[in-house]
Image (cartoon, rainbow, N blue to C red; front, side, top):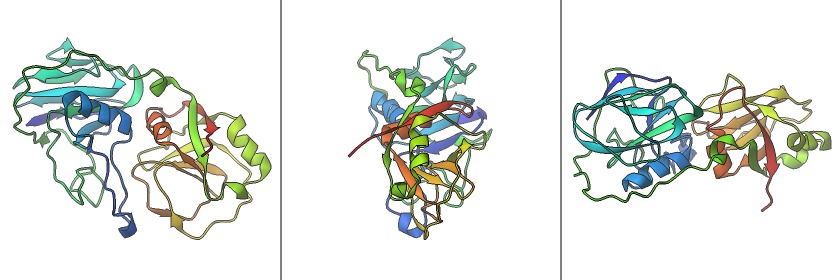
Length: 283
């Protein structure tokens, strides 16, 4: 068991999402940065889709009520066990009554805490990912107690170190493909997409990243159609919206671009106010 002594800014349990239910209007959800979540699980020997704790910009403070092993990936904010520093991307054994805390954020936006065997929260529609109206909670709160497995801690572990490439946090390039309504864009706007920087708005969240820059948009709305995490929509007001993991399953704004999976993971590690450029990929 793990007790939440103090929450961060936005703490939730996430896995790789609730796939196969979009026809019923159920969002996919899941960890914003699949790369970091999978890495944490891989270092512990978990399945890729084991549930992890995702935190945003500010990390929680936790107390372990049983022995286990942990791994922290993504956002760097100097993790400590009983005030002794531990590294990201490493296998760490924790004991009953140990306290995990974090310092100030150094870089990145979202961090991931994996535990041996994964967090054992309620599974709904084949996923443990939190989502409002699907699960009982949308966020963790102070005083919550999270269930763990009773797996024995392996005696022998590899001491190899896995490092996340700096480009995962520092790259200013977001790779995209043309989407269904791209060709309906005026030529000037097509050029603007790939020759200008864009700024992440302070209004961004797990549902969508909004961009501050505006387009002169003469496109007509479309008939409500399927959308996916990573779909870039252009609103009638000329604002670009990048749909994220908790996005709706359909939308009526033109779908002009689609992020690659790795680009999506990297974008999820950027904070409001950061800038980037789109780079067009070809199939």
